[in-house]
Every structure is written in C-alpha cells, then in structure tokens.
Length: 115
Image (cartoon, rainbow, N blue to C red; front, side, top):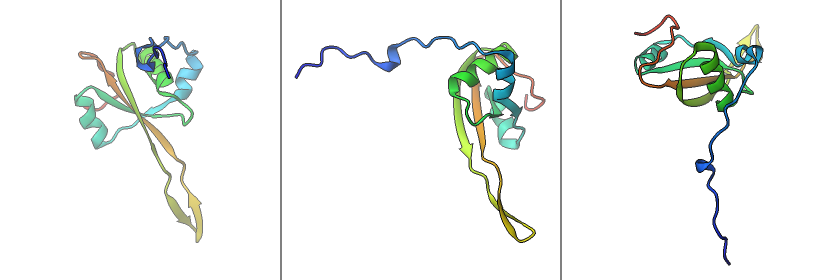
C-alpha cells in the first residue's frame, strides 16, 4: 500500500493572524504579577491571564499587536478553580487560563515587575 508523499503540518507556514483591537483586549485580561512570574520575566517570559476561548495563535497576535514585540513562543495552562465554602454552602471559583509568552532576544514588555 503506497501512501505517496505526505505533507507534514510542521512544514506549512502559519498565516499571520490579524485581530481587531477590541478582540486583542478581550484576549489579554491582565498580567499575572507573582514571584514566579517576576523570575520568569528576567528570562524574557511574561505571564498573562487570558480568555478561556483564546488560542495560542490569537494570544501571540494580541501580544505582538498591543506591545509591538516579537513573540517566540506561547505556552498555556488552565488552573482549575478551587471548591470553597461560603456561609456553609459549597461554591466554585472560576477556572483561569494563563499564557506564558516568550519574547525574542532583546525584547521586553514593561509590566511593572522584574528587571
């Protein structure tokens, strides 16, 4: 059974994503300012809270558009909300999606933390 040649997804160039200004602000909610985030900023990584429906490509386009920097990579994680009690009743905190944005060498964003 001959498959011929197969195009790899990795070899295809990714199109540049263009966001409206409003969508860019919806994607990036706020910078996360913690001790871990300030240590990462020394190495050119910045942490943002982003919308739950945002993709890595949208996050990259939003950061490049709003801060005029070159983004090297975007890693995301979802922190599940904790179950808490309030006046004897169970409640659930909201889930949070974090984006770890790595910038190209020599680039930086002024978030008010780190170096």
